[in-house]
Amino acid sequence: MAKNQTKNLKGSYFKQSEKKGSVDLRSTGSYKNPFAAPKITKVILNVGIGRLVADSKNSEEIIKKVSHDISIITGQKPAIRQAKKSIASFKIREGMPIGLMVTLRGKRMENFINKFVNIVLPQSRDFWGIPLKSIDEKGNLNYGIRDHSIFPEISREQNPLTFGLEVTFVPNAKNRDQAVELYKFLKFPIQINNPSLNGVTQIN
Image 1: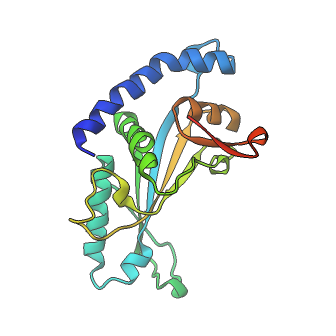
Image 2 (image 1 turned 135 degrees about the vertical axis):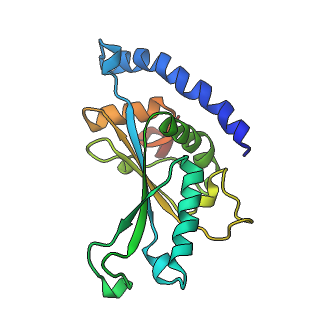
Image 3 (image 1 turned 120 degrees about the horizontal axis):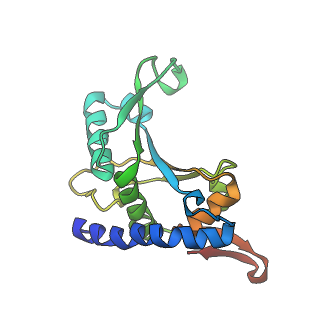
């Protein structure tokens, strides 16, 4: 998808959320003060590169390529995480780069959430919604993406190297129920069990 199309999506998504969010969440969650309604405060992306680096003859080039792609996807340069101890069975040495991490806030966070909900998830193969178990007791939503080339900025033809990543959405909700309510309002496709349908239905 073109960058212009991505930009067109984000205006209505977050501006309407700001205007509607305090009303809808206040009515469903008893928020007398609109500012008390929960929000997503940050998004964390983690990429494990330990195996890629261990199996490569040119680890610096691998790190450079992965870092470049993450920068394109998020608009922010990732930090390198190093191994704290050696693990022989995984060919990991102490101090060896094993991962890249990015923490997004503000506009970059909003842009990423918009892209994740409106572009990435709908294009995911065999996607039937985000399981409720992906949301922990603190309300953090953890979701794994197997192939980063699903992001619109990445071209598999230009860069055959693919990798997976873990995305964590961190809200300031007081509990898990508040967080689930927030994700549903922001149009995260959350699965819920529906006994009347003898299966799982998707909340938009």
